[in-house]
Length: 315
Image 1 (cartoon, one colour):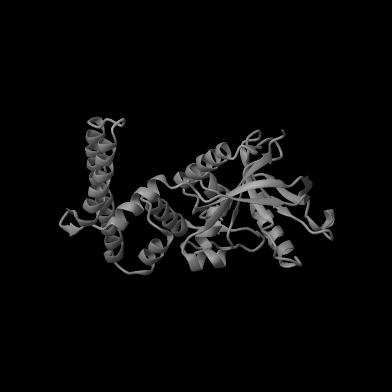
Image 2 (cartoon, rainbow, N blue to C red; image 1 turned 120 degrees about the horizontal axis):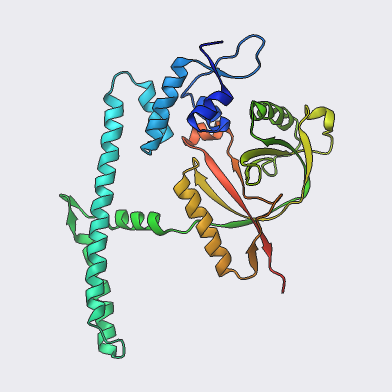
C-alpha cells in the first residue's frame, strides 16, 4: 500500500476532481487497482507518471482523442505529429487574425472619411463592404489560398454566443454526497450507479454536481425515485430539491474558456429577455451534468451541460 495513492490523495495532489480521474480511466488513459480489503481505487507510480503526462497535454489544449492516439503508439512520432499540427493551427489562426485586423483597420479608415448625412457616402460604405467580401474570398496568406469559411469559422468561434435552451426540472427528492472530502465522492459514485441501474425511466438526467460557495467544495446529487428510503442511501443525506427553470448550455470537457463564454452568454441572454432573471441562491446553484462514459468514448470528449437557475420576473 505504501507505493499506491488513494483517489482522494491524487485529487488533492494534482488539483483535479475524482470525477476527472474516473473519466481518464473510462477513456483508457490511466489504470487503477483495487486491493483486497479496500473497496476504492488506488493508483501506482506508473499511473501517476501517466497522469502527469495527460495534464501537460491537456494544458496544451490537446484533445482526449489525440492523447489516446499518442499513448497507443510506440515511439515519439505521433506526439510530434500532434504537436506539429497544433503549431500549424496556431499559425493559421494568427494569420487569419492578422488579416482580420488589417481589414477592420482599413474599414475604420474608410468610415472616418464618410459623411453619413450624404447618401452617396453611405453607398461608398456599402461598396467597400462588398469589396472586403471579395478580398476575403480571394486573398492569399502564408502561401495558401484564402478560405472565407475558415476566417468566418474563427471569428464565429471568438464571438459566437452559446445556444441557450430553457428546461424546467421537477421538484423531487435527492440524495447528496455532501461537500467532497475523503472518499465520499467515490462512495457516492458507486451508490448512484446502483440506484440508476434500477430506475424505471430515462426521461431526464438524474445526477448533477454543483459548487457549494459557503462550504467551499463540490457536491454531487442524484434525483431518487419514490421507492428509495434512507436504508437504500448508505448513510448519505436525502434532501428536497425545489426544481424550477434553468437556462442550459453545452460545454466540451470542462473547458474553462467555454464555461466563461457560456456564463457570459446566458447573462447576456437574460439581459435581452427582460421576462427572466438569474436566480442563483443557496440551495439553487448553477449545476452541471456530464454525459455517460460510453457516450464520451464515442465522441472522444465529454459533453458537459451547465444548468443556470433562472426565474420569471414578477410584474
